[in-house]
Length: 479
Ligand code: MN
Image (cartoon, rainbow, N blue to C red):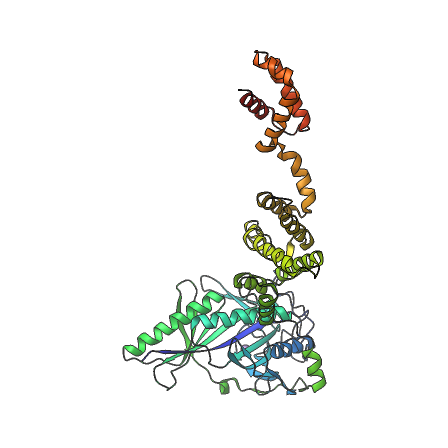
């Protein structure tokens, strides 16, 4: 029998609100100076009182609705008591018994619950182990915690789940969920077993990148299987992930809920939500990644790769849709076949040229200089065979670099490109046929005649081409 892998995830995401969870200190994940976004409330001074951030509550509820979960009509905060130097109050305001959301599903993985809590500060340890410093800017930042059922069967699935959740949170505007910045942090509960019996769960913490999620689960599965196959036992514990060594390591035996002495937070009122409120909130849910995937595939008939690129970069998707709507306006509804052809052309240039260019130039899709209207214009010119694909590629490069419209670029390029062999040859031939006398003189050995012909070509090209090149070309034609 094969080993069966069972993984459940616990994901924390910092919410993008203006202020913190229970006070009006700024919530700014990009703040570089330590301990500036703090106040007596988030520092846990005695006598202060927390106030619930409404936006944060809505964010978690909207996330719940987006995942098909059920927003609870009654919810409240609980105190989770533990000591740690990054936790100023000595307890975390969290939710235990009555979370904001129950249920839901994402990528076929059932969601157990989603609740709201506050983040802790950030500890920085002296490399020599002599002291630690703490930055409280993050203390009290609203944090959504989402827990899944143990429905995940592999490391890859776990990574995919986390990636999809990140996209959903971004679409909702609830969180940037940037893992590198610590805005989204994952933990995985991993067990392996052969029979229908459950394996022993090991929790792996500190998974701060999608790669870490995948690698840590792969490692942990291997470790547990090796233990069991050599007749040893897996102990229930919490392990950390060492990013550099790529191993998990034992941190502590797993604590249970009763260790935290949860009780209802006495400083905050319980919350009640009406059906009307919930339906109003539901109406604010935008098109979600999976819906966009479906629609883009059906509407545009583009490759799965391009669909994925567009779904994961909202600004690129918006750009694409504008290009297509321009092309549709241009083609009108009466010629669907032509419109499809133009769309296919657009998809080709988008994928093989445009995406490559912005990657090469490290341009963020949010900072594009080129407008979708101008890109559509270029596609029209290619479609109407006004320019060759060679020229189109050059023009597109300039458009991406400078953002001007294609006809302006082609006009200004038109002059410069007279230096181009083909165009020059044409002009040279024309000058030769118009100046037979000078040609004869040259053939008789009069070098000045060549100078004269050169001058004529120069004048025709408005002085844009290289004299040496012209001389060479004329001499070649005249033998
Ligand atoms: Mn938590």
